[in-house]
Length: 418
Image (cartoon, rainbow, N blue to C red; front, side):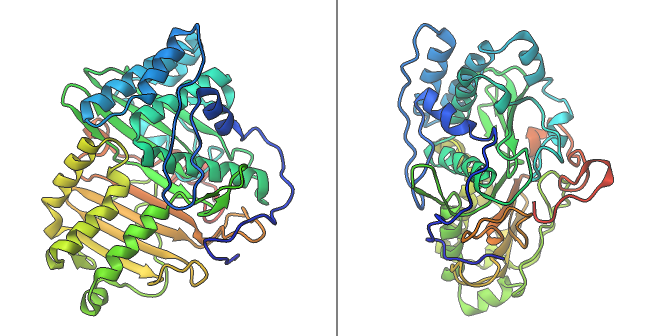
């Protein structure tokens, strides 16, 4: 396993192997959208493209660049950007990207594994034109706030970094899919599904009830720190690590004893793309936290429920806070945020209205880059689910195609640590 500090500049990577993975940078450039690339949290920026003569592109630009502060605005802007994207597609492509709202495919088509192991719903962005890819990314930008969009594009950039620089032979690195369940509308419910390797967003937007939920959603990262084509350091999970250790370090020794489950980094209990029984009662309860510690725990949770506008985030956190006394958090692995030591961390937050799991993976899945951490601290899977409202209660949870947690089709065994 490679072990370096989080600030190491991975300039000693092997010569790049060109694949068709580098669609994100060109898609964002075509739309005038910038791929996040600053160390730590940074700030995503966007500018309006100069494309003219195309009503669909003009509409998606207006939607994506609009600043949403309320749930209604986010739903309206996302629906408008989605319709603009659909307008760029052929009839055959539209048929491939649109599903019935309650189609069970929404529960079986996302995972932490590459698309060679779990078939995704919708259209592969690498098969689209530059204009169509830009329109697809504009939908994502309309849905997410700046920090959420930066996190997601950082995850995608890491996948492309592996495709260009690592020893992995996985040809699907850099392939991401977009699908809609239900017709995108500002007045009725639809789900946007977007993902591929280490990313599975399932965002349900309901204009009729003025509600957005991201449950279930998978955010993963490998490597956790990398240098992009512009020489900028990218660290998609910087906020997660920072808020998690701020919470951990706020605890008393007695609280840490209750919280801590051991030095060995625990495995995921509810893997992305699997069913979940939502274990609870292990570790430290919210009832045993001070007001300050409760807020720090909510800050951790906000990394998943706070991907969109301020109102949507506040509503989700208020619901979780109401049952925080019966929400439990446990921790294993490292107790200091130092990527040169140990194999990373695992924590689980489990309560009536939220289930979050963060797990460092003890393997690189063959995606090694000289001088870059691609296991443990450098390879993380996370999951966010709402035991009361997964898929906005529009479908019953099922395992992804290929088995538990996105295993290989036909009962085979996927590469370890994917």
